[in-house]
Amino acid sequence: MTHPTWDPAQYLRHAGHRARPFADLLAAVPALPAEREPSAGPPRIADLGCGPGNVTVRLTERWPTAHVTGYDNSPDMLDRAHTEHEGPTAGGGRLDFAHADARTWAPREPYDLIVSNAVFQWVPGHADRFADWVAALRPGGTFAFQVPDNIDAPLHALMRELAATPRWKGRLAEVLRHTDSVHTPGTYLDRLARLGCATDVWQTTYFHVLAGEDPVLDWVKGTGLRPALTALADDPEARDAFVTEYRDRLREAYPSAPYGTVLPFRRLFAVAVKGA
Image 1 (tube, rainbow, N blue to C red):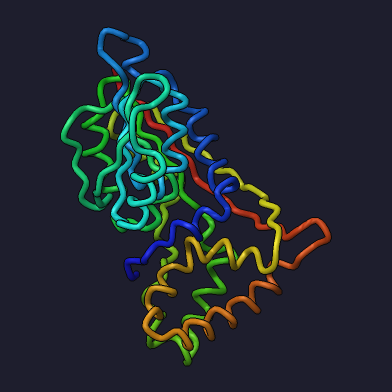
Image 2 (image 1 turned 60 degrees about the horizontal axis):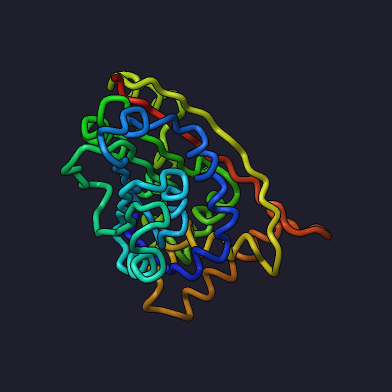
């Protein structure tokens, strides 16, 4: 899989739908150690793979006094986050952003909460990093994440199918996410429970009603299609041809209705609380 180039503006075109799973994840996070022991000081929170920072802000709303740092490896995403969201927060906390790669990020201080939103599907071997991240939590701290769990949905299956055709397989067959990019719920539960965490894992399928022309294509241009767009960036004619073929297949798989186009989207959630 190639490392995609990200487009913050495209990603944010469906910001409302994309933010809802993060809100649902945060609703399941219990009180942090700093909340239970005020003498410990304000909460320290990391958002791993923060993107443009639009949902990282929600952490400062839930924990107004916290020092929150969003980490990402995309310069374009970080530029947007720095410009629009960085600085002191209304509750007396602080929000900042820094470059880091989830494949290698090693916490240098204890955290009350490490959270990640729709990132680990891009990180091969991410479950092998859990031990280091849990070790960095304060006793009673939480590691929480959600990931898309729909790699077999038409959205992705049609993309891989097209990329494997004779016209495209030489350039695209190996750049897209594979079916093993996300583990089963039971695998995550086992990994985290063995690290001494009280762990809750669940799945939710959202039925997003999207508006506009070819809205499913517009959605995936901000996420799953990024590796293909990146691989074809030096050949605009080929890029446009691939997108057109993919668009036609999506139209059949996701027909429009008078009220919009329905995109079923399953996500996997995990909330792991370190033993006190």
